[in-house]
Image 1 (cartoon, rainbow, N blue to C red):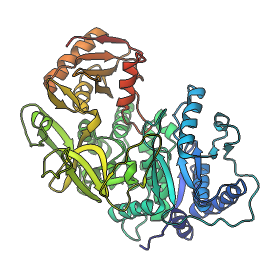
Image 2: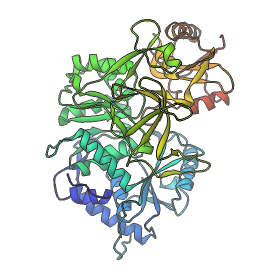
Image 3: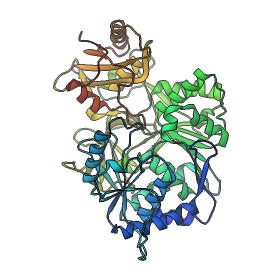
Image 4: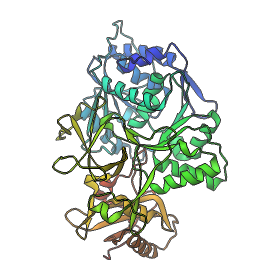
Length: 542
């Protein structure tokens, strides 16, 4: 297909044909055509121009996934401005804390105008927050629009808090990623409906459900994030009702939805899906196995629809994707050898299962600490190069992530058979008894034990020591915490070969995750260090 040069050009081309955004807000879905979004966005652009927004400015948007979010995002791009999607928690428990966090994001992005859900506008500095109701003075001046190299998005990385880091991506970079997505997942002339619920402020939600549908000229069914959180099974019901062909979401979300559907005894037909790929977080092999077994047997999911991806905001979105129709590839490697930097396949002994993230669609290199290339099956830092890379960062004291045109991701992984396997984050690695371990191994070992909430375990090393801290949430609020701590310590030691230095049982809901379901290890480590975790019990036995 011919490719537009900017995001608003993509919408303008799509407006002449079929396709729409369908919001499942309750009751009859609200369908908003690409043509209607374009018309409303042009009016929004003129209102922004009347407010003094000029090409190169950054406009913030904060609110849930609603048509207004899209209207003002596309309106900002038509006006030549960049968009800063601002993080919003599912529930605003502390308005003052949210207001402080938003001020930090605004300062970093340099926003002087923020379009906000009317319920949130009062949390923004005076004169900055504008309720996103579509009314106001329109400028007679025609918006000039962006150039391909203009900044399109300032994407804040997951967990940005007091010192946020904004990833700067151009329209050209976004279009390059859209081209990769289209070439990988779509077939020319075939209408393909997808379903999504990840918030627009997250790169997965922004690219796959807000920007990609007009580019692909296909429809998207949008379930509000808060509705998914209340009832994950509704996501699966929407897939069944619409006979959607694709959906991308974190593996933890797939796990939650499948477990909830089983508990409720629902029989949902997912046989329409040709793409059910994990994204936005590391893949839990237990969830992958469960999807391959329960999803197929009970819900009719096609085994070849399963797959996984690897991506990051600095690459706009995806770096590697499983091939369509190839299914999920899982391999088992020696845990001891992995700690020494080699992914050696093993069927016995202490092992770890890893899920392939598919074949890279960008240039990928695995390097040693001195940045020298490593051979196949050797674990090192993942470096990425390609046209969809970010221009850099905004924020105080942010490092330059580029080396000779390559992006240093900070993630560890290896290549095998042309596919990428991600083993963890370099900064999250923990040392125990002089050997490197991945926190995911301890979290997986704990999460599979009776009495522990799967997906609600977080492991991290205590700064300056070789002590590993493991936090778990109980599956039963009335559990005996002392017995649970002992069971976790024994079970983890048996599975990984190392006993955690401290097992902490925390109340349900205490383990922090991002909106997309990713564990916030750094935040939990800091809260533990500061004594701010609401402990239900602790054991300090080595």
